[in-house]
Length: 424
Image (cartoon, helix red, strand yellow):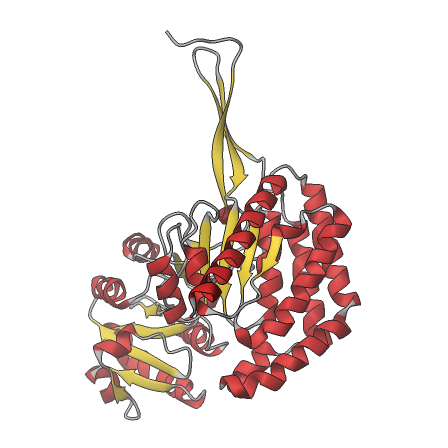
């Protein structure tokens, strides 16, 4: 890149960041009613201007083959009248969630009479980097603004026209309802250098959130000079204990793996206690095989299901996001825990057991963002947890872990009320 072009791009990114900072200050003063009015107006305008969205989306779909998108990827990119309505409804639902900003988390009265309040506040400016699906543009804007944060959206080139059309509608709704128009901004350039510039602006941007492939997430985690909320992969496990109801376990495993394979909370690995392997594994492997899932297992698994292939350590670490599952027979609960902590990604891990003491030990010892007891891993989701919309699922331990909804995009400050007290 020529020096002049580089400086122009850097200036462009800096202008966006500065406008976002100014908007975030104004957002912090807005009432929940104004933010909710923006959300409702945005939902209505998305529906009213659906023809614009569909026209923009057609341009993206026409370009999809040049980006090497598969039919499944093109389908995720595609908008229809029904999908636009679903996006609008998702935004409206955010408006129904409790207002997080200004919530008094706790209050204490000190012996000297000082009243100390811990109050929820916005983080400030969020830089959100994501790939493809246009619905993510609307979802991210809605959850960031409702939590009082300005957001800089940098979407993938595959959905560039759709995302631009959506953001233009969101900005029009902002002007109509009194929300700062720069509270939501879309980065217009697809130049990869722009991402690096934004990641080097901690004085203007408070948080970076990458959502997409592992390469994108690793880049953001490496280059960001501000905190990052992320997860690298979703290698999720289901462990079937010796005390499991096998019919329940079978239903859970099939749902966790097959209900939707290409998502981060789908099961990628199955662990089975040795005491029930002979009775459970042949049937569940056949059921998975009938669903088109390739089985990669240890020697015991192969001896019980001849169509299984030999698994390697890389298989046990893998997030397949498709019709493959790794299987291992373990001699004890402790071995299951050790396997998950060694090979897992800290995303979602489930146990099927009738023994509450076993479930409690598993829940305490497994190092993961979400432990699921006697249910599918597919429930690790903001909506399913009752949190409303989410901007992603974090496998970090600071500042947020698991589904990141409104509260996970906030911090807090202390407000102290006195009556003239001075410190001795």
